[in-house]
Image 1: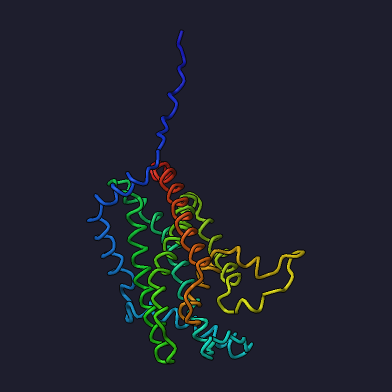
Image 2: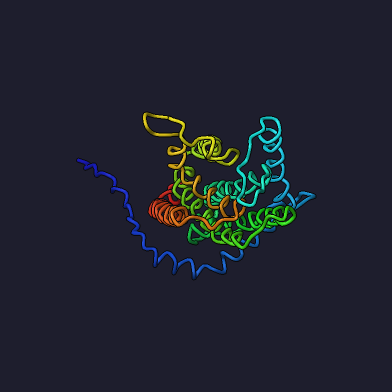
Length: 289
């Protein structure tokens, strides 16, 4: 008489996320992070004739297209700065630099984790390392755009010390994008449809963010009952990020305390939330592939 025994149930390890332990592990891996950053920089535009000049060509091409369509053909009037300055190209560019960084950092986090899964089967390293490296490169590309933006305003003679707020805004934008990307990267590793769907969402979100049009076009226009379109648009966090950039660079004003608090709190909350989801689920995804 033979007895049939059930196969042992798979052992599932519960990962308890601790920000302090995670940061300590990342500090111990700083040599690897530096290596990954160097590799990202070397391979970003490897094989192209223009190299890192593409970091400038792509945003400038978008700037020219949107300026022609909305600034020339459709004649969208930008707001007038307190000193009388008015330029649709400058108005547009001050919003594009923020959006480009958010898009690059969120998509970069998703792609970096998926691409590193094969390597993590061979050797262990914190799964955040490739994401950090990809984000640093995105910030370097963004720095090129900010320098061009600075030069454009300087040539126009429309510049103030308030431009310095961009040095705070851009890292916060990157953290916000990374939080979104880390939260979605686990799903993206299992289902590639997530990245395609997110690309579609980004296209919608771009036009739901006041980048190519001023908020004045929406103010007071009823949307749902007593709720106006500008109130709905403000539910989009990127509206506040773009607004801070516009206040600091185009309007030459100190960003409002409310705007800065929204940007600061949203970036921290989304980063911690996305990081928690990523850290508790990433080991299971990596081991299951």
